[in-house]
Image (cartoon, rainbow over all chains, first blue to last red; front, side, top):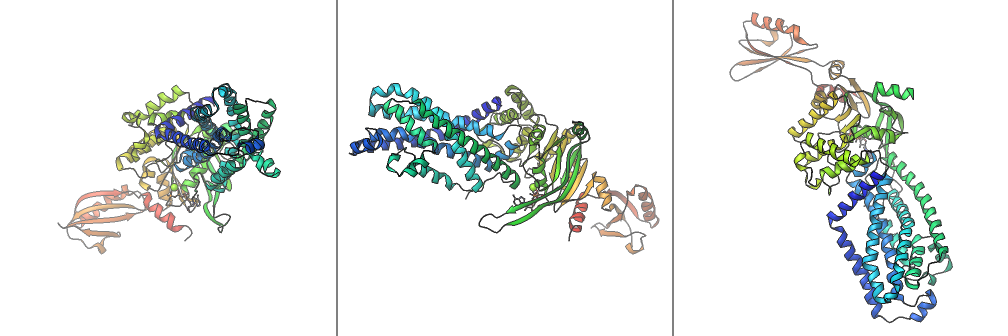
Length: 266
Length: 328
Ligand SMILES: Nc1ncnc2c1ncn2[C@@H]1O[C@H](COP(=O)(O)OP(=O)(O)OP(=O)(O)O)[C@@H](O)[C@H]1O
Ligand SMILES: [Mg+2]
């Protein structure tokens, strides 16, 4: 199993590097983050009001620190869903399903590759911007933030699996865009969720992105890590774990019944 | 357990009463059902090359996908290498090598060697085992010069050969090929057929589909003619021909004056430019014993016999009969 996982990761990394997708992706995400930084720095905002709403003194830092979680989340959903679609189109999914290795090992390999990419992105793009804006005193916050981020990959990955499976079952790619806009608006990665009604806040806190964004910001910007914050993490991860497991079994069965390994998503 | 061992020794693949309906449409469109398989059964003995032969849409690919554990039938049972393909797909997957579409399933940005090492490792080999076996197979299939090239740049024939290497990478006991020669030029196709025969000689059990009758005849020990999701004839190619009551033809080139209606047999006669006549006589059984009688009969009419050719019935005819005879 580990041998198979290693070879999947290797194949995926090689493919990523050979397509030249990687530098393009980093460039795009980098310029997006730069825009937030630049516009945020130029515009004058009601920082006092923002502090009252969120407990953070700097709205620019707030956004910069949250943004990677959005990218991470969208990236994962795309990475898993598109990955499966792409495999299906090339006849690879079928071929993989005739091997002795469970397809979930292949998805896990993909996850590890995406996690490595996300960490690289965080270190190469987010960290420098925060450094410039907040000064050297936040430097010591990055290591614990990184660890929490890695822990947070798990529920976000499982969330992505749920989204991808639903997308494949419903045979529509548009779902990813819907989820992306929900994540962007309601999980506090860009706007504080405290501005929303209590119901929305409660629903938002069921999304792993909300918890991760808030925890990482706490660590990076305020230097606070409350161990109690890790409990919702684990709870949400478990919840998505069970849910994605059930959905996956349903998908596998439905694909095997219908014989549709090529997801026609027009 | 003993049941499994028994089955394993007797038959490599057994399909019994397979029924499969494809559902089309969905939430917003009207649901329709297409019956792809309608009670299809056959058995592939150990060490045999077995051809599923049928026209487009007969249900060959559907059958192959069910046997390869990719598709669940609505009814019926399948065992492959002694294991139930519907309930124990993992066990079956460990023991089969599959070529679905010889053009597909490759990772285009990986090299031939990387592709095979990848699939070999997923099939349970160690990296080094997979690599060395991959190199050997690429050599056997004439791809040794291209092992470090990305598959992206491979021609259809090269991809087909790579697909065969991929199916063989873990040295499985059962091999399943869906139209492995489709789209190949005659030379590549011949190489693929030679490989199929070689696998049969090595004692592998091979299921191959084709709509090419000559191909089925040339590679397989047994054939099943499939039409509209049913087996309409099965057995060794020779037996299938006999079962369909096919004719042998004796073709003779003769010179001299001849009135066909005076001959004791029904014969088609054609005249060539130089006055050579070609007689085509249809007979029900192997005409070996009849030939001397035919020749002496012609000589007695002062005809010169230049040549005698015996044409065996081809599966082509069996095929046309089976297809036009069923359900029309
Ligand atoms: N995914 C599918 N959805 C709906 N109908 C299908 C599907 N796959 C096959 N069919 C139908 O099932 C029948 C059998 O198809 P199948 O592909 O098994 O035939 P085949 O013998 O492999 O034909 P060919 O020689 O063209 O490859 C056909 O009528 C086909 O239209
Ligand atoms: Mg077919």
